[in-house]
Image (cartoon, rainbow, N blue to C red):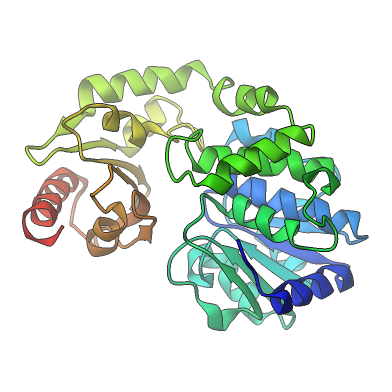
Amino acid sequence: MNFSKEDISRLESVMKATLRPVIISHLNPDGDALGSSVGLAGVLRSLGASPSIVFPTEYADNLSFILPEGIPVHIHSEDPEGAEKAIAAADAIFCLDFNGLSRIEKVGPAVAARDCVKVLIDHHLAPETGSFDIVFSETEISSASELLFCILMNTSFAEDYASRLPSESAVALLPGMTTDTNNFANSVFPMTLEMAARLIEAGVDREYVLEHIYHSYREERYRLLGYLLSEKLTITSDGVAYMILSGDERKKFDVREGETEAFVNIPLEMEKVRMSIFIKEMDDRYRVSIRSKKGVSAQKCSRMYFNGGGHENAAGGRLSRPGDFASAEEVASYVERVTKEFFNGNE
């Protein structure tokens, strides 16, 4: 992947000069959000800075292994004062794995108000370039972690040697890429495999990464999955599989952040399913995850009907009550109506 020498030089200058950088990623941070954030934080710390990380909301327990000791992490939903204080003190802000300040909701105004250099490193469509001083935006790449890895390989810090990355950065970047590709099941490019090989060659223990990501869930997660597949899974005549998890069901099964991650992928294992939608009720809104097989655009469906966007075969969005419908009972009929419209005239 080719980057302009000017952009790399500008980024290096910022990274060398900053003393109090803040790294920010998106709502409901996933493995890529944590992986890319820690990957950058480790490099900044090796250059003498004291980085902090800000997430708008909490991350899943099984991802906590990515976070090393010594790097403060502020969760805005739990401690808005601490998060905004860190942002107000920042002399550089790095935004990873989201395409604009609107995607970080309540954290956005604090970032917009801070008068310092702002850098965007992201792999989603339509970046808000006007909000940032330096922008690295690539959509034909698996993850923000892979994009950051490619950028770092072009700097004088690494000089194209993965072994020159701080160990905490290398260990973070591999799970970041692994989770965003669903363990190499989607969005995989030649460079994705090369990145994995180079990090493993540099000493990252992939078995350790997989053990923490995929083999450390609670029993309750699988009780919930069994219930959803047996009681809540619906498949339409157009090949759309959908499951809706209500707020009451979320409480009944004691669902924690991140525990429904990847549920949306499971129905795609069926031959007749072309698109899978998983909807989770969160107070007065519904979090929507959409996955699709090749030839069907999850991104377009999300943008048209679910107030969201993302990648061609992996997208997300949201619905609100009463904005999109009057009651929770209408969610299923809404999904069936709009997906039928999508597949019969707008696909």
